[in-house]
Amino acid sequence: NPSQLLAESSGAPCRILPVTFDAVDEFVADLHGVDRLVMIGVHGSAKKFHLELFGRNQVGRLSDVSGRVLAGRIDPEGPTMIRHRLWPAGLPKEIGGERWRFSRSAGSYLCNYLSYRILAARPDIRGGFLHIPSVEVVPLDRQQRFLRHLLDVLDEK
Image (cartoon, rainbow, N blue to C red; front, side, top):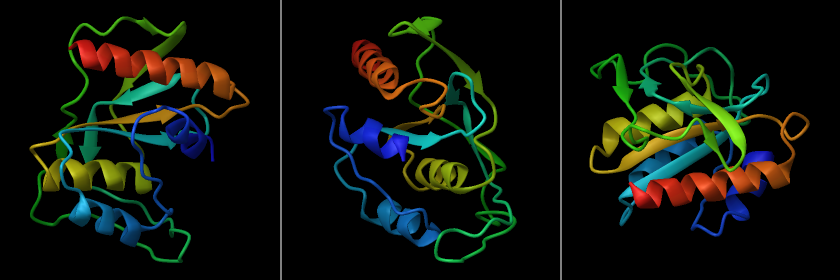
């Protein structure tokens, strides 16, 4: 998984989650001592990096790797969407030599599920979800450069 390779090579503390709803729920429940969090996942058809703007209170009908399906609202009592709190205004249009774009939909699978759960459960954390393209579209060394520069930009803001 290129998101795992990217996170592990970033130099920042990271945790790799299994592709299950239960793993996300355990991660959210056990997350302590964190004030800023970049979440990373692969967007299979992306041509550039996507900085997600929202976590949406919706999950699709795809099963996770354990076979569990959670279709519908993530939190029946929660808001329809929650804005990410990490991406500052004025980000340069090119970071580390790579173009990126804001995205209004993190999909309806585990990337969005993780995003929404973190944002809903931990309003004290400045969280943001980064969707990366496949390594066939943007090779890993370029993705590593992008992430390093993105983290530097976030440290400055």
